Each structure stands twice: as C-alpha cells, then as structure tokens.
Length: 629
Image 1 (tube, rainbow, N blue to C red):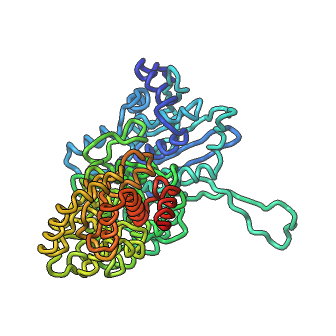
Image 2: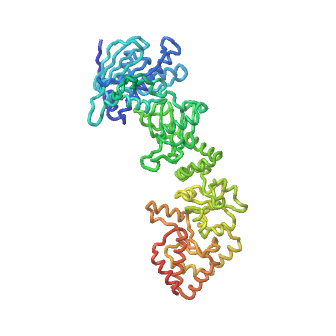
Image 3: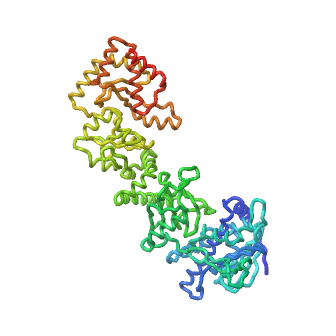
C-alpha cells in the first residue's frame, strides 16, 4: 500500500538550501550518487565476509541514460534499504546511514571498513537536476522491495514494489532545459564519462555505462553511407588509483604519464614524491615538481593548492590549505578518509588533521629537494633556476619562521668559484682569518666586479656571494647569519679588512680633516655623512649605507611605489687618492669648485651603484665648468 508522508519542517528548509545554495556546481550530483552506491556495496561486502548468502560475484555500479524519457538511472548491487531505512535516511535529511554503520563496526572492534558516503545529505543533490527522483531498493535484511518517490518539495511516497536483485536503482527525471542550463547534457554519454573520470575515477568498484561503438565496414557497405554503430557496456573508471599502489609497483614512466595526463603538461616532471602514511591519520599523496613553470604560473589564474580526494572520490581541485604559498609550483594530490569536509564536501573545515598533513607534505617536499641537491646537483640547479625565488620568499616570509628548514636549500652565485654554491659550501671554502660571509647585489659577476668596494675584498682572496634577485637582500636581512657567521654587505658598514695601524691612521686623518668633510657634506643635502673610507684601494670614492636598508632594497621598494623610502647614504672618500688632494686644494683656495667637485664625485658614486642622478643636466653642466677651469 502506497504511503504519502510529509518532510519535517526543518528537512524542508534544509532541502531547499541543498538544492539552491550548498553545492557550487550542479554536476556534483553524480559524484554524490556514485559515492552512495559505492558505500552501499561496501556495506554488503562487509556483511558477506561472515555470511556467504550476502555475497555477489560481481559488484558494480551502472549508469543508464534514456534521452527519450529524459531519465538517468544509477544502479548498484549493494546492501539495499528496508522501508524503515528509506524513511530514516531519505525521509529525514542529513541522517547518515553510513555513519551509523561505521559506529556499529567500531563498537564491535572489527577491522575498519572503507565507507565513502559518510554524508547522508548527498542523495538530495539529485534534486538540483531532477524534478522527481525514484528510489527502487531491495534490502538483504528483509528480502522486500520498496519504491521511494519524491519531487523534493513537501512530501514523499513509499510503496511496496518488485525487484529481482538486492541493491538500489535511483531514477532521476531531469528538469526541463532552460536558457541558462541544459539539463539534457547529463544524458550525453561523453558528459557522463567526463564526470565519472573527473570525480569518481578511483571508486574501487567498476562504474559502467552504455558507450557507442562503430561497426567495422565490409566491402558491401556503401562508402557514402553513415557508419553503423552499436552500444556496448563499458567500465569507465580506473578504480585503483596510482597513488594507492606501493611505490615499488609503479614505474617512473607510469608516474610521468600520469602527471602529464592529469596536469596537462607535455614534459616529464623534474621529480615525483610518493607519500603513504598509515597511523592515527591515514592518507596518500602523490606530488610532482614540473620541469618548467606551467603556462599560467605567473598569472592571476594560477592558484596554489593540491587536488583533494577522499577515498578515491574527487573533492577539490585547489586545496590551498594543504601546501604553503612558497611551494605553489608543486602539483599533486592528497587522498585521505580523515579530512573534515563541510556538508557539501566542497570545502575543508579547520582541523588539526589538515595541518598535520600539510606539515608532513611540506617536510617531504623539502626532504626531496635536499636529496636532489646532494645527489643530483645539475638537476637541482635546473630546478632552482625556475623555482629558487619561491624558496627565497618562503625563507623571508613570516619574519623568517622557516629559515632553519630552507637556508641549506638556497644556492647563490659565487664570485671566486664562478658557480652557484650553498652557504655551507661558502663556509667550507673560506680562507683562514675570514670571519664573515660577504655579499654584493648586481645583475651578474661582471657588474659586481666593477664595484670599487671589490678591490680590497679581492686583494684578501675572500669570496663574495652575488645577489641577483629582488628578494635576495631581504632574505639575507632575515637570515642575519649562517652557523654564527654574520652576513656582510661589501658596501655597508665597516668591513674591518685593513690592519689596525692603517685603521688608526685613517681615524686620525679623519679628525684632522673634519672641517673639509663637513664642507663636502654641506654641499650634498642628500647625504647623511661623508667619511674617509677604509674599503677603497684605487677608486676615489664610493657610496655606502647606514642602517638596515641597502641601495638594492631601496630600488625594489621604489618599484613597488615606495619612492619615499630611501637608504641613508654615506659618501666615502679615498684619502690615498689624488682626487682627495684636489679636494683639499679646493677647500683651501676655491670653495665654489669644492662644491662642484663634491657633487660630481657623489653623482659618480651613484652611477657606480646603478642609481641615476636626480638632475643629469646639472651633472653635465658641473663637469663642463670644471673642465673649463
């Protein structure tokens, strides 16, 4: 006898939310119904372990489209539902039979059963595309068949019915097409195959549908006639994910092919990382580092994130919580049954499990990079050329919170060795007596070599790390030191490279010439101080800075619209150069020429640092007037 029952008031409200707002994409309905079917088969398979009467020789899920009647059927040979279960699980929204089943299994201390459909709400996603849904089911518990039917509004009916086999058939009567949405697309075999491969490719049971096949032509066929076709039942999912296999069972070629197909790259990745964790938190991860940045890497369209699966069912394409920003170039996926998803299974909820997985994924990636650096230097340098700047930003971010994890992965150009080296390799090559790590900013070695500050460094045989990226000096500022060795810019502060006697001599001369230095400073409003240099050999002057801001950092900030932020500039004069003698003469005899010479020397020092003068015309005029003297 058919019974008509009203949905509860709260169920009506939730059902309206499910249909209209909870799910982002309507196509999700097929994923949810397949997951529920897989869940039902899991339950039957579990019970069959102790009772052969419940077993089936071939568990499967069948999807059938009927374009003429606009229906889509999803059939499984799972456990089925009794009348009471239909009322409880489909008549009351958010009632999860899977969750209760898992709880009963755990109470009996039986081995864990992999259940996908822990979210009873999934069934109701069908009403996003269907104006009516029928559920024909026969449970192994009472051997009776029932038909549940609802239009997803106020009520539903349950009636006794006929069904030969155990399991469930869900029939969706699709909504009429509109100008915005063509619901009939879900009846297209290519759409069905595409959605299954996108969301349910790794469900463990075969998912089958009818697929059009072309008949071979024979000699009697008319060459101009339409090709003949027939329908074949075809399994359209892969079932066993490659990341679920043991690492020893998967070849490098299989991994590379999977990566290229999954992430639409034509090149093999630099490396792959296979993670399999089975403890209180169980998950698998398969990660790849592309050989070259993908086409959209430097665009706004590129978002960080790993693909997220739960028990082989695709949930999210870009789960940013699983990987830090500085590793955004890494592609891959995480599959876990233990991640807390929201009601629509489209978003993660904050949870310690997420953070644990993300932390371990990050550690595994950094461990693989460290292995590559140690065992395959050429490959690592190829990687660093494209992605090294990301590691530098990672080291700089959050006030250097990750500097201990990242500092030994940084490689920089060495002036002496003429190649990229680590900080550790710099330290190993240091001559006796060197107490700091020297660095200089420049586009290449040739640019750094022309800096006047290099003369004294080279005379000592000390190496200099060449910083070429905008982020480099900011990164060095965060690091501060490496294994107790301070980082020292060659044009900032006292380098302490001359002997004590020479240093004392310059200090005494500075005191004697303080009036001259003050006059030069007064001629240069943009300079914080004018001093006698302890770093120059052949050049007449150079610029250095005080405080933490360097010229390179000033340039970077200026490019980011912070033109008002400037480094404190110090003009250093070489007391052993003939130009200094000329300055002394001008100070004693011609103050006007002194001012002009001071401006020219300052502008020359700016140019040597790659900084254009504020007034090039005045610089040219000062030179001409000096030449005419």
